[in-house]
Length: 476
Image (cartoon, rainbow, N blue to C red):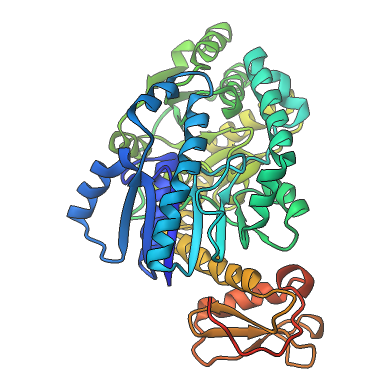
């Protein structure tokens, strides 16, 4: 298929949003011919990478606003406003590309947020949106632990989401998408109200697993956090749990924090107030490759985020064989299983601190548990590799084409090049007589089968509108 991907953030050898843009596009190009619409600012690093690793099916088209507009990114909400302007101004370029290439599917990829307009939503082609996040909120009982600045930010964030969901123009734009890939269950619940039957939940991030890193035996449990230092990241819980561990047991642990952000002052003061400053080390932001080497030097990865779409650093730590301690919320809750880490229930602040401290104690005193969970983390990361994420992406595109092209006046729908689907009550069903789907083409791949299975488990009125007219199959 010919695929257009809009990825504002897309850079190799980076973390966070740029990694999502790069890896999803790279893996999609292993199966399809892909054009990526991205920022001109990303051009140098992309072309350097392509000179080392050529990809014949991967084409980049660059777009940016005038240079003077970059100055506005430094202002409050400047990045968000710049992103909105980029998406809107990129629509003309996307339309020109579509007129020339005739894309089979378009995909709005990054930013991973449900709050912004899309560069490709106006194109007349099956379209996928996601992975998207933004529907998660901090549990009410934990909100006040964020401090005044954190509380204000979260209240404004929740209010903004409600306003965005109510804007008529954005609602109409969202309805044009054939399929939405939600990065978290909470986001899926928000979008499912507006787009019933079109939302699936898939992780936003994947891993690159090479070999499991094996650290040495340490007399002190070495805890590691990598990421931004914002109140919603929940590091105040990790610091309090460390203090609780030291005050209630003989176990000793040391926490290394990699990253920066406006919450660093509050976290430093908290460590000093709890008299554990000598057990918490703030090393600031580090180069991507340097950060990767830290995983082998530590025993446990701590990721107590109160809402997160995924956590790429979390998955990277798992790929290095580190067991995880995280809150049972958002994307991390999907990534971490009982075999790969310990998930703490987000109940009350005191309960979270106690449970996290208990998790640290168990991992410090039980090397067998630590080793078992480390192996489980490595296996889980391997199961969530970028290449497997791309397989889910194909599934999403196939279902998306069926949703868009099948309308109230058509009997046939196209789910891929040369593959047609029809819904008939009298035909054999993949999963029951009420949701029958007949594959009317012999060249059906395993990915098609998976997509059809997912179609078949939803009511026809949701995933495929009722098909009545006996028309000849038509291509997209």
